Image (cartoon, rainbow, N blue to C red; front, top):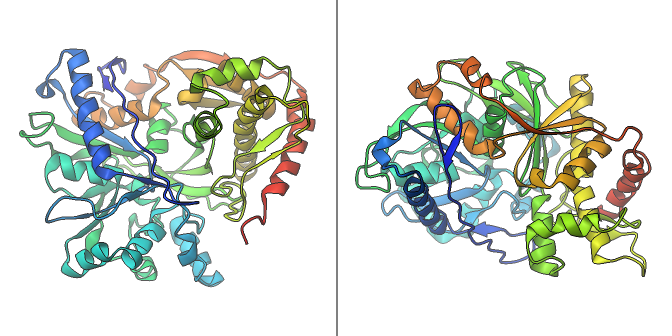
Length: 479
């Protein structure tokens, strides 16, 4: 996406890339395919805008966090497919840790001890892929999340990441904002394989003139996707809250410069760090499967042909017909953190139709988000009155109304729904002086829609009670 100084999108291009599913619980991406798709959409967006690379003031990068790439610094080629954030193969490594070790790691990182994060993926690669182990022995191994991989390719060898992505690896101390030697030893990850940790907004490097931009453009912003959405939604103050609806759902509440250590299954994470300013922190609730549940209805079950069809199908019935769907395909994330859980459809009768399953899917997105919102309110002691929402599913009016009814709060959707890209643009623009400070950004935010709850909706009472019963049915499935 290309933005102007008013924060308006003037061009965009997108490409879907392949999801590789070798076996149950394994999810992979092809790093070279991602790189080629990125170069393609850059070219397409520039062409649509009628611009050349040299017309750009700066580049911001935002990425799926935790997804881990291993490559050889000598060839610049991947040593294995990227292991995606949803992948659970690292659980076998985490199961060997003592409770004391897990508690210490959680305190240092703010994270749950789960295969979701990058460290167990790196450890698995080192143990199971001979090419990765050989590269480590020779000193040629490079590990990184997708931001690091793309920057390496764009700059021909600069190896960096930012504090938000680093905070999702299980390897960074959230107080010092540096790689932790004890955690590196615990997972067996060589420190020289990891990128240097930078702030979220500064001039890091410039692109190569022989690359896709054909010019030296400063790369000046890096933010993991959910942190970028916080910036794009202007959640700069303590208590500001947003939820991004994507492949999964991610709700974050800004806790300012305070590190709030969760007792409710939430994650403590770096929210953002602009240049030399102090880091801002957040509590995050991560839901593994929301938008990807709609993809499952489309790709695996064939209930719909296009993701956009689900709204009309779900709206064709008055309620869910007693059907509840918990899409715990890779276990449950916040606030449960149960890797033994698996997906269930419950309450099925002979009267149940594909429309009821479609509606149950939209409700599942909202119920999972309510679980997280309730945990946030408990942690902060503040009952949320408004939730800023963004991401593709927010265009589904029925889903957003269901969300408002279930959570019993107001939802606010911005004009620019792709707030992850906007947040990355803001971070880069702040670094090069396009905007003087965050107050200049506040003046640009505009609301496109607001959803108000039906007070006392049965979805929030009886429905939520049934949802909690359905959650119980998912547990202890994987022995």
